[in-house]
Image 1 (cartoon, one colour):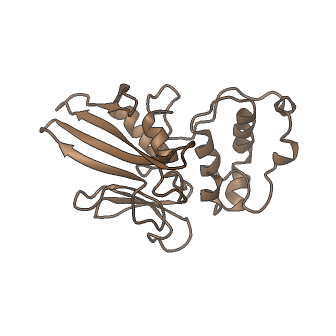
Image 2: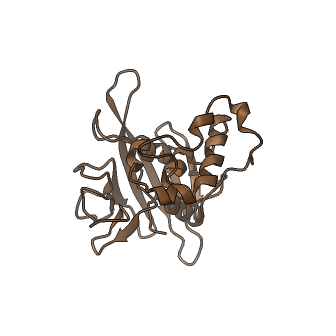
Length: 235
């Protein structure tokens, strides 16, 4: 996944060096960190042309020394007990594919600029340069087109979104994605269903139904925190 964030500049990597070292140390110890790979990339960890500052001593995990066991969570990210963390939706964002040799995962560079336009499209674009479909990750929410999450310069969404309204207070949103099967090297399609129950003047909840038959519920507060963390909304 590191190939999607090679544009991170040296200044960003330097500023986040302490956090990068902590995350990398936790990974080497086998500790599961909240979206660890995404955080390493979004913070600009590592380098595009050489080794990171920790590569020189990346041998035994015991050489790392004592580290804080609490994962670093950037501002706006959900706590570890948020049910969307490491959920089937989280899996879909990290491993969706449009082709067997295409980009894996919808992983925008959160150190770039977030843009929303009048057509309900959200774009994560490089901090420098003119935003375009060739350089931006796009979340298209316009019901008149094909709603979904698009990687730069791709015409098909990595995750397709289909809205189904059932009543004034309940609607379904389908997330359809394909991932590469490790054994057959073929794309396998999966479907995640979310059912939102709106309570006028009260707390609304959304039920997430995963491809394996399991389900869980999230509040609006949990959903909004997760969206900010993975780039499904602007900060």
